[in-house]
Image (cartoon, rainbow, N blue to C red; front, side, top):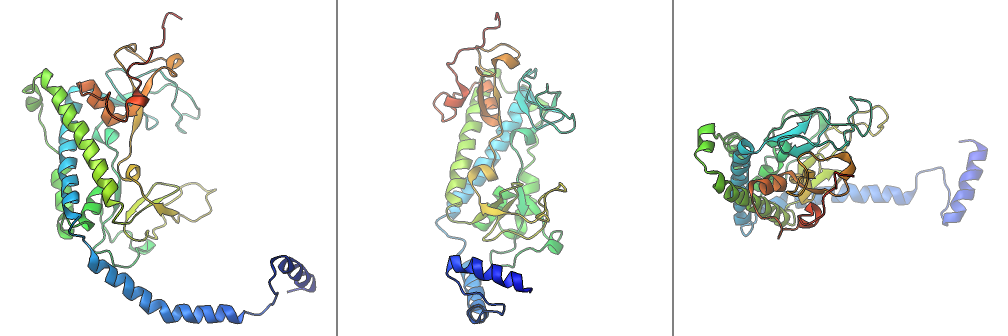
Length: 331
């Protein structure tokens, strides 16, 4: 190190009250030796922590989540047969109705422009209930998943992985469970056999199941640790995040694909796909000029509302504006 750099470092260290030295500090060496000494103790505590799981008092909560989730998937599949759902061809916008709206909110990079009209195509259940997957862990005490090991672990829905660690599903049966219960088979004949008046009960059951799943996940996240990436919303169910470098797809992102983990919440495991909600007093096609009048709602809630379920007493009523004024088309 040159002589002028020594002077600069001595000057800067004087503000912080620290002594400057070009040699390694003895304090740092002693700290490293202490860390090496207590490292086996930390590993033993991590392994012993897994013996306390699953907590038997939380197992019924996880089983109730699985039942409510299966009920939600079945009822939403039935409603999608009766009420059309559209999605934009270029962005992630979703709308519940026969005709898409004319609100200029398409911001896809493919079209190279902001605030354009959407191009609507038929949607699916994945547009209403957004799938969130995570790595399946064999046990909570296993080592951190490295980048080279990312193909050695299966990807399963994050809710199932959380319920599996809570003791509701056996770890070896989670893949078979996902194949059987995540794709409910409902034919068109079964839909025709349901009277139109009974669809409101299907919507009410779906709305109740949606709230049960979210309430149960809120309880599980207080006991079982889960992580989410702050940048790309990757979810990992476990005490620490994985080290698979899957974050970042642009050249200017210089963090080399490593995730920035933080504590996961309910919306990270089961996202609220917020869409524009058409009310009975609104026109058949929502126009861009009346965007300040229209309401918003999660896609599941909007679908249940179109089926006839009562949503005025739910926490989404404020955003949906059920009694609000509509845009005067005469102007």
